[in-house]
Length: 371
Ligand SMILES: *Cc1c(COP(=O)(O)O)cnc(C)c1O
Image (cartoon, rainbow, N blue to C red):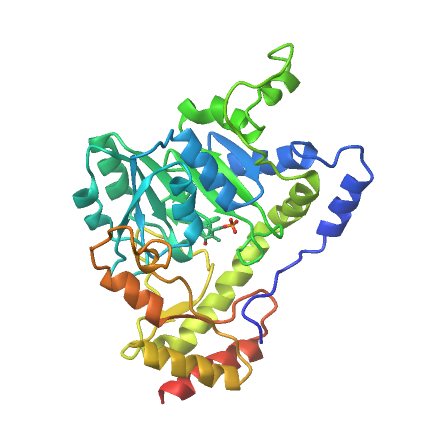
């Protein structure tokens, strides 16, 4: 049993064929606009721009935030490399913070101590699609006049209180990589919630030109007006994504069903492993099913036990502050919780199409290990 299997709704091929039969397969066409309107209408973003990845959307955030050499950006150590790389590429100094005791997400209470007069932004990561405590983060941002960027790569259709994730920070990014809930192979989204960034975002998106304004008839020629890059996906990707969006409700309900089945089987392990915790202010978008072993030795033994049974469970991030690339950066602070999740977190096979028997088999195999 593999860890992930991309779920294809069925309409992707039909929409791809429509694009192939049209005269427009480059970006910013009909399907791009349909996807972007869907996100704006459903989640209340001020503006939405499809990108070729969440990594690209994060790079756009760093440009929009005007990050330059020496600016400091606060983010969790327990995250994907792109969260950090996007800001490093613009010369930022990364200030990592540790995870929470009860959740791999960043400990909101440790952010303030890391704020200096050089701090420009806080990047939050909603791990497993479970919200960071955004009231705490936004009040710090207001107090110190900082930007908040949500790395919502895993957080599509998840909420903080009643507010969709990705609509709270000034800017946010989503991923449609084949391992996420909604996919287009590779793909992503930049959501803009602060009007200050709407105009510049589409210029950066279109290689630093005012091409979008030109196509709307707002200027009579287009040219080079800012820095930028080729961040927009082709219509082939957008059409695929649109088929997925049309099935979002079905996809989410099926994923939640699988998640709940795993949880019901495994909740008896609550004294042996750390089970996923959903704070009362957060929803669960069933992005993944993880739990945390009590040591790296236990995890290694569990993963090989499962592998013998042909079950490919996997671990996840390795603390970025200890990475080969970053560790010489004069980083002295210990991050024991991030290290614990690096060493001990396990993710079980999770994809639409897992049968009840397969879920049962995975769960029984885990229970057998702990017997
Ligand atoms: C998947 C992921 C990314 C990267 O997404 P891509 O679309 O592959 O660039 C970034 N951050 C987090 C937290 C992720 O889970």
